[in-house]
Length: 116
Length: 115
Image (tube, rainbow over all chains, first blue to last red; front, side):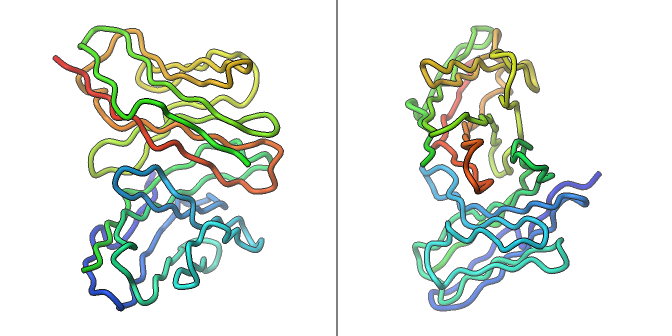
């Protein structure tokens, strides 16, 4: 079956512009995660959605970052007034949530964001 | 708080030799531990996980990892390395007692298998 898909694969924008990154999770996965991967760094957790519960936004680095998940499926990560330090690869993952959080996550190919 | 450390930024190994990629963790409760691999310009792929039970976990592509509670380690191993194993490897941990399902990842270890 289809894996996690993300679009666009690459995005180049100018400082100060807003960008939207999209994630389509695996069908049936109720949990969805966003991460940021910067050069030389590990994965930085941004936000987590689980079903209809309130999202865990504890990883969002500033109020310029927001995300939503419509209909329990597709998610959009929005970065407003982009800064050069926002340049990174943004990864989306999904999983079956279960009740223990022990399920592995399946990752999309990522969106490479470059802010000029 | 939960954390994970991968002490080696890079590991070089000759093809056919055994490989080890190190990972240590810190959690308050019991850990859920994961290994992922990332090939260039690709997302992360799941290799294996430890949740409970046998300390030796076997995963994809011939990889295995041993959970050591006393040393708080979860090193990734393979008996005989292939050139195609060259990639970036990430260890991740979640505290099973934590309220959030957030995973914490290490910074990654670049594995280079030399022909």
